Every structure is written in C-alpha cells, then in structure tokens.
Length: 171
Image 1 (cartoon, rainbow, N blue to C red):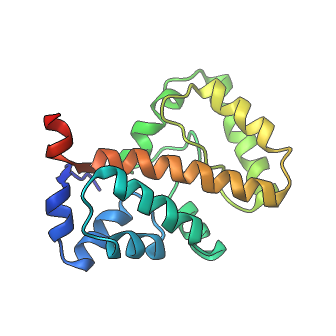
Image 2: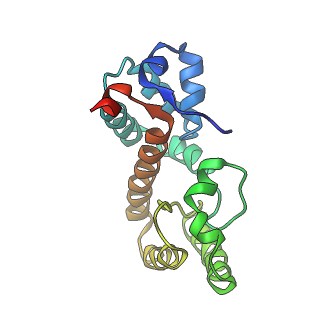
Image 3: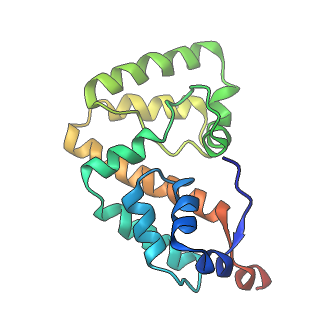
C-alpha cells in the first residue's frame, strides 16, 4: 500500500476506522493502531510518536506477534513499499551476504519463533548480518525486549514519513 503523506490536522479529522487503517500501514498490530488513533487529536508529530511508543510498550505478546507478521524477512522480496525502501541496502548487497542473511534468518526464526526484526533503514547488509549474529546469543526474553525497541524505531520512521505537520515545516 503506497500512502502519500497526510497533514496532521487531516489525520486528526479522519473517522476512527480510516485512521486505524492508515496506522496499520505502519504497524500491523490492530491494538497499537486503535490506541494511537484513540489518542487524537495530536498537536505535533512528536506527540504522535510518543503515543505510538506508549501504545507499543503496552501491547500484549500476541499483538507484538501480529506486528511482526507484517514484516518480511530481511533480504526477502517484498511488495510492501516501506519495507522495500528500508531494506534497499540489502537488495544491492553481494550474493554472499544475501545468502548468509537468508541462512541466519532461518536460524534466528528457529530459535525465537518469529522473523528477525531490525531497523534496516540506514544500515548496510553487512551491518544487519552482524547485528543478527550478535542477537542470536540473546535469551528469548532479552530478544523480545530488543524486538520491541527495534519495532518502535521502525514505527517512528514510518510515522514520520506518513504524517506531515505544516506548522513544523514552516519553522
């Protein structure tokens, strides 16, 4: 789903169902999207980001799994525009690095039971592989906490891309 940026005031004015649908393009946890939408109106993008962080911190493990299900494997072909943009460095990496990412992704998934989630934006394929290798040493509880932090970063990036605040842009 390609979504053009929307003014914060227009986002605040959307019917709840439309606001939730828009937020689901950032994070596929319905509980997260409903909570962020319910916090409207927001006066700044920073308020939205803070609300998004609070909502994510409060979602159940089941909801966290719903959010993870919306993310493709690092290096996998995806039709999700945000994921494709965020993983652009992986797409242009050499065959050896992509093959290693694919193999270690499978190892990660076997160990933790979910996709390896990492903020890929601004990171090279080699860096993503290094992070993956380090995270394989985490115990499951520690890894879930890391996943929540990474998801919060991804959500912030996507929300900043989705929402415009003309008042902030005028400064």
